[in-house]
Amino acid sequence: MSRVLIIAGTRPEAIKLAPLVLALRRTDVRPVLCLTGQHPRIAQEALDVFAIEADCRMECVPGGGDLCRMAAGVVASTGRLIDETRPDALIVQGDTLSAFAGGLAAALRRVPLAHVEAGLRSGSNDDPFPEEISRRQLSHIATWNFAPTPAAADNLRAEGIDAGRIHVVGNTVVDALRFARASIEPRDTDGPLLLVTAHRRENWGDPLVRICEAVRELAQRHRDWRFVFSVHPNPNVGDVVRRLLADQSNVTLLDAPRYDEWLRYLFACTLILTDSGGMQEEGCAIGRPVLVLRERTERPEAVASGAAVICGTQQDRIVAQCERVLTDAGVYARMARPRDVYGDGYASERIAAILARDLANARRNEASAPRPAYAATT
Image (cartoon, rainbow, N blue to C red; front, side, top):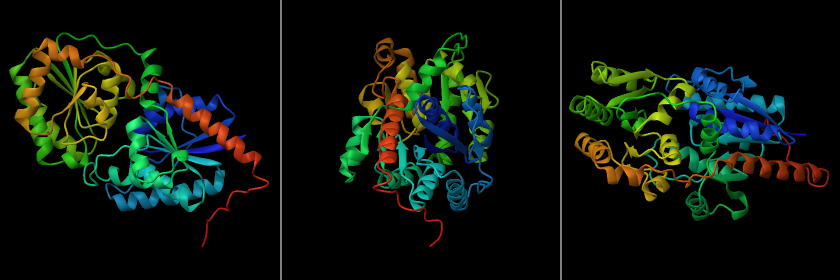
């Protein structure tokens, strides 16, 4: 039986990798899931929705916001874990520092790498930072680039990635929604419910202040609208959000809510305001209009389909776009229908099947073409 090591650090990674863990368990590939500790509590809470317990956790302590210290810790810990488990492949998802560091460790130990959600590009290394850098580097390390959309695959080919290393499979976040929707009931709500998230590093400071001021203005103008703001644990976010919005009676601030709790709001909401990539995909998949609180997005499919609008971070534009979507029935109806641009909910099964096939072939060929030795030392 083949063994794959799966590295995850944040809650979004846990959510998007959980369906793949379940799919791999239905093959002859044994998944070993390791949490890096980037989001120590909420990552496992997300896995709880899928009845998955992490197989191991890294002993390294994230660098308290220092990206270099954190990356170094994850690389070293992943290297030790590879030496202990000797996997046939390593899997990472997306573009976090945990994903990049895990992928780098795989390359240094000569372990084949699978990159889930490969090929997303914003075109700027500074937006989002450091995610754009991470995902670009992972594409060139990976043996398998699992692209969620044809456009993502086009990005990879444009960078010279061999077509044989690219597989268009859909996005596993749709798989997660399909799994969760069977057991999670939406919350009851009176009137419009707006979900808000804003946490990206490039929005810290003045952009986040403008976003919060826009929510405050909308909350005061429309007392029958209810706002639910998921507050990121980083104080660069939480301190600003609480200072500007805690006194608004129709604004609920949730401190890093459990994934199942957040899904109840997601399935019940009317509109999403977010700088999160995952929520752009989720809103598109379930038919909730999305206003993107960024100047550009690496998920252009949602915008092209009409499900999302790039709103930026200027207060007046956010207010105007919210009111346009929620007061014009025609605009809302055009945006609020499910799209399948991110897949049909079976991306994990496709990934698992490809990995099971290729790893089985590799094992059969091992005698004649052995894998390069581990490079633990120079």
